Length: 501
Image (cartoon, rainbow, N blue to C red):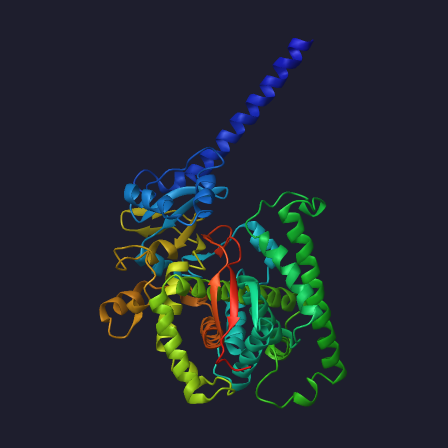
């Protein structure tokens, strides 16, 4: 009996192994493998181990300060467009700027955005990142209306006040984790733009939950994870519920206020500029947005505003600290602006437009840091590129990082050199305009890209005109699950003697 049981167990195990291998082979071939026939060739590459593919190699590489060998080795072996197998499915990886441009421009036609299920669940089906077609177009347009006008004097004044309020807490000296401080600034700014709530206990409580939510983006989405709160994904789901609940409460109250006023937004009904994004949504398209649509939309915008701009601010300071000549030139530019304005005058749009070297620094930080490493797309139809055919349904990753750090496109590409963006460097600018995609492109070009530049510029202005600093300990960059410094970039700050108080 025992022998029979062992035989049955062995047979069952064999069936499981065969099923797993068959599933891997199906993934390898893909749904269109038979239909495409022998003449249609996928880009060359390796799918690695069964089921796991090359996921562990990719994660291991991106958890180091130098993930480039993962890409370099495969590009050298297979070319700029190659096939791999990551995050559970076969994926075509592109380090080819021409193919990346094609993918960005083809959004909604030949391809659509496609992200891991963990991100989709945590952001919500109605988020800006995940909606498609007409739904995405209307949300993108609304976002552009609200966040695409950084020249607005009230918005500039608010950014200036918010940055200064944070920095006054560092006087006369402080040791801070700069990334944490930057995230407070960007989170409070985004909350103000979305729901008109000033920094305080409510915003700080919401921010703490957001940290947990973002941590779950590239975690494993275990079944019934809501019953496993000890897992990263389980904690992220719980945090998502709290964040959505807090936003829902604010939105519901505003909807009730609108209903009480007979469908108008009170005394402000006739004004030209809405006070925040919720008001934009309540008034848009005759108030057709549902409560859940508004919650998902606001939640996803908070992620975008909170994470990416704060990392850009931190990396700019880190790269400048490591490049004294660039820091000296930046200080000179901002000292001149402050001398012309006087000590206590807030920055205006004309001041922002008088920061050419600052824009070079921001461009180079975006290029070297690659806060957005790339974008996932899925083929809506067979895509023919060069001698290859990428079948319908196949996942594609357009790597911005691989292009930005390629010596064929930028001289000494892996060196921080903000001078390469200066106007007199015509060759570099001609190349850069063609392949520089830190904010994506096409219909999904980030609508808040100019606002992000303004926030970083104002932050750098007040930092270099008010403080000196040095690193308290060595910190390094990692790129998985997101781009960040490992320790939050701890620095010692000291108020300059000649600084305004």
